[in-house]
Image (cartoon, helix red, strand yellow):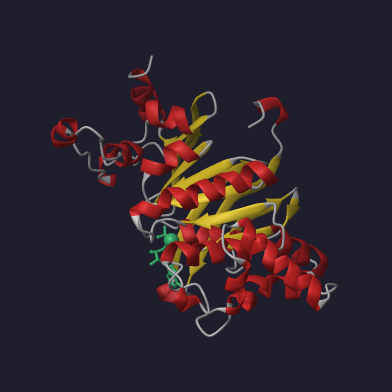
Length: 313
Ligand code: ADP
Ligand code: MG
């Protein structure tokens, strides 16, 4: 990661709001979310299941319409109506890797088709032979054999299937990848391999990641910065180290308390914190997005900011 002054903002999310349904069934899954992702970094988004993480990813991908706010990619607004040209650029440069490799691959399609589907949209210029070469290279890039191209997804293990999903994203040479819980559905034993692959790809190609997870255990090691989301609201954002050592929001502290300890004795004695949103008294003071320490933001009232900072003076 370059130092602060050189940081280039790749994705700028401003006051994002995403709503499902309409009328009485209207449900706001993401509320006033703001964050910036710098070029080349791994930006972690963490929160329990149902908190709105995938919704944010899908809104950035333009799969879901937004009901408020702006999403800027390289300074250009990409939510709402955009030009055909910009849409093409976004489709090529932003890719997503999905949580469940069991569900996200088309069972009836051969690996060659699954991996190269994205090229059909963005690289119409390629000949069949060039496309085949790209498939071969994409499979090699993720540690799979080129021969796998003629097989079907059911012939592969969970880890191999996720590699196919990664090859599918890589083939269009994206700059930005949204990795939506890419290891959550995998066996413990292969999680590290997939993480290492993602890290290596970032190192080689300078890819920027929005990495989504539901807990902090792995996130704290792989992310440069982390945003914590609770019920559609981003409640805290900081550098990964800062977030772990100086967590302020009680929800972040609860997530931290849930990280398993390697030492079994400490694990047994560990106190699990729970978060109860009714602990906040926001009747007189509305919570605001505040910079409580340098580049450390928390959604809180002024008195909470004062009280929570005290412990770290
Ligand atoms: P996460 O990825 O953090 O688990 P999601 O973004 O999938 O959370 O979901 C956020 C909220 O939006 C949840 O309450 C979920 O039930 C709701 N939701 C997700 N998809 C839909 C949908 N297609 N229609 C209605 N509600 C949805
Ligand atoms: Mg999700």
